[in-house]
Length: 167
Image 1 (cartoon, rainbow, N blue to C red):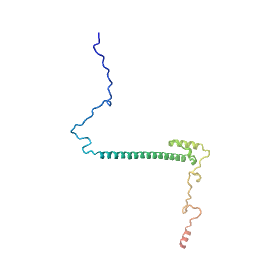
Image 2: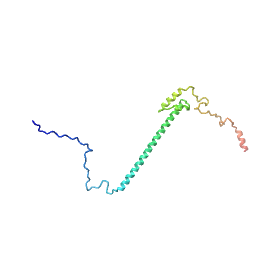
Image 3: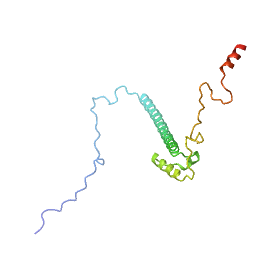
Image 4: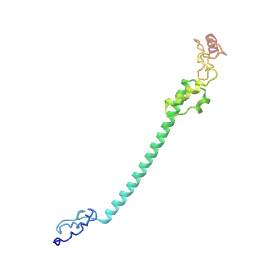
């Protein structure tokens, strides 16, 4: 017996839609062009160049704003770290020389470093109630009614009145 059916022809793989040429859509002869009847090539080119300049300017402004934002963020982070170290130094009564040993990415890390540094202290910290000898305390004011704070001269209203009458 012979085979009456011929062998099927190999099937070609379908081409991708992008590879298949599409016939150009031709507008009907009686319709107007899509850009209108009053198209001016010089005006179109001027518009394109102006838009390119605006795009460059906007891109430059955006880059400047991003750089300013980055600088502001870095400055903010530096100020936060400074605040954290100041708080830690005040909380643990550390001297200013210990500032270089306080570092960390969070306030908790800085506080832990300050606590560890304060734990290494060999002498107890000076207290604020010791008469103002602590470096973190303010001098105690000598407040006396009728006294300006200077211990050199004493306030004498009668002497002031005599001097005023003489002049």
